[in-house]
Length: 183
Ligand code: 5GP
Image 1 (cartoon, rainbow, N blue to C red):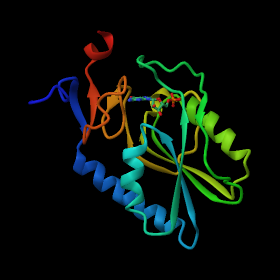
Image 2 (cartoon, protein in one colour):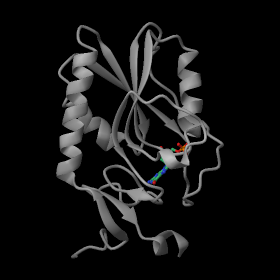
Image 3 (cartoon, rainbow, N blue to C red):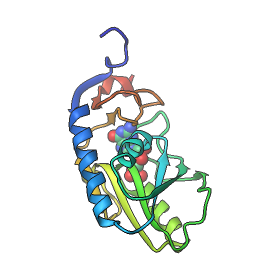
Image 4 (cartoon, helix red, strand yellow):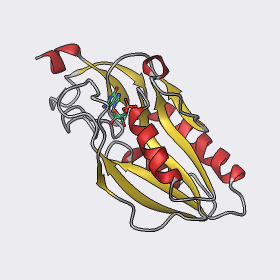
């Protein structure tokens, strides 16, 4: 490999083509389910941006987007459960059909916090679309309306997902080598 970008990756879990196919499928499902409505996609920075960008061009109904940022993993790969709102939405979601677009749901603690926060703002509907579901690690039940793939209990990077702000630009989703985070 000419750069060191792929060196930390143990194996590819989902190829670029597999992801693109799946994302197109989700876009069609969402377009069908929300037909006749104006859909607001809420994206969680930064891991979800690649997914959002590809998903929204696969949706053929009117959609708008807005962003939130919550503190999640730092350089460590273990979640603390403590989540903090770093950036809030620009507009009110009251009376709107809202779909939260997430990169990965692990313990569910982050999204649980977020959903409570959003529900209190009285949207017309509030659902979740996640690219990856690491269900084996779930601590809090989160209803998922749209899901890309199930993932095992491994630390994944690529297609927007980082480790210590790196690897987001991998075009596939891969498993990070343990030696990268164990040092
Ligand atoms: P949760 O609160 O569900 O445990 O954590 C969700 C957040 O943790 C995700 O939005 C993501 O930022 C991070 N996360 C959880 N598992 C992984 C993983 O395997 N890889 C990466 N890069 N981030 C993860």
